[in-house]
Amino acid sequence: MAYKIDKKRKNKPKATWPAKFRMQWLQKKPVLFFVFGFALIIVLFYWFYESSYYTGIGFFIISAYGHLSNFLLNLFGQHTQVSGTVISSPRFTISIAKGCDAIEGMALFTAALLSYPASWKLKLIGFLAGNVVLFLLNLVRIVSLFLTGIYAPKLFQIMHVEIWQALFILFAIALWIFWIRWAYKDKGHVPH
Image 1 (cartoon, helix red, strand yellow):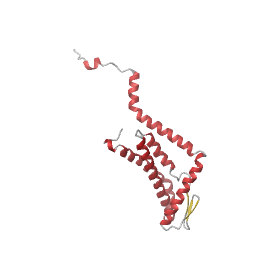
Image 2 (spheres, rainbow, N blue to C red):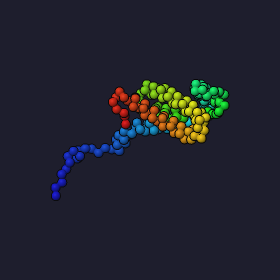
Image 3 (cartoon, helix red, strand yellow):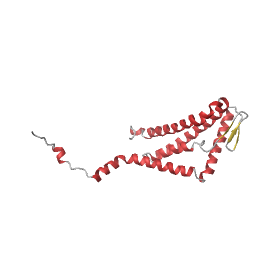
Image 4 (tube, rainbow, N blue to C red):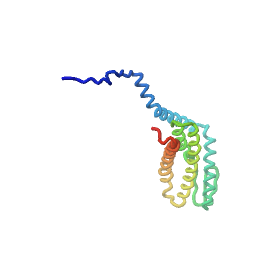
């Protein structure tokens, strides 16, 4: 029985384990950078978000949402008033609390954006535009919840806790994917 010898394989030197490790590291480096960068930013965000440093900033953000939502509701003829973080009318009252400030969704979007391999210029544009869009979406959320409380009070709890929470997170993820596609549109492909 005759055996053929593959001359191409015979002359190839075997890769050493450091070379294999380096090659695998280079292939997985962008993914590992994204995962660990994202996790680090989220951990730092929650440390800050739960600290006393955030209290003043958080109240300012929630208060801004209250005043802007009050303005929009009055445009719709709801005759609302705002006091701190509470929007009220003769028909319904809503209190904007921590967690209703869209900051967690913005942090999710920002962490994904900053961890993704792209230029800082593209990240800055995405950060500013994306967070403005999420801020405006949260205004829509607050106004719609107030209107739900007036016109469909039985749906208020499900809209507040389940529907809008999921929609906001999904929208933040979709916005990030849109940013990736926008950031790489000139190159004709989206990196893997």
